[in-house]
Image (cartoon, rainbow, N blue to C red):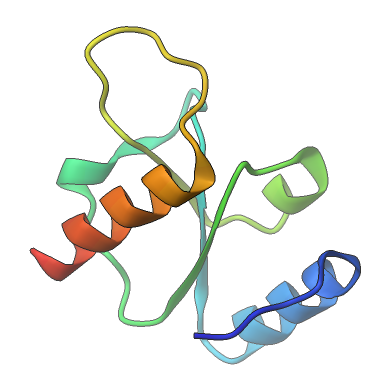
Length: 89
């Protein structure tokens, strides 16, 4: 696992894309795929809370299914749910 400083994020993401990684965002959008139906690429980078600048680099957004309309989950909760789903595939 790598960490990247926010000011370096966009250049780091494009470097990863050039290396064959898919960029995934955990965000509710009109074209998000449901996490439980997601087929994860072999190599990917993900970020919770996809801001506008980041969305321009995203290949696919993932949405965590919820019973009601909840606009946001904590980053650690979203990360834990996403990792759990990935490891169960």
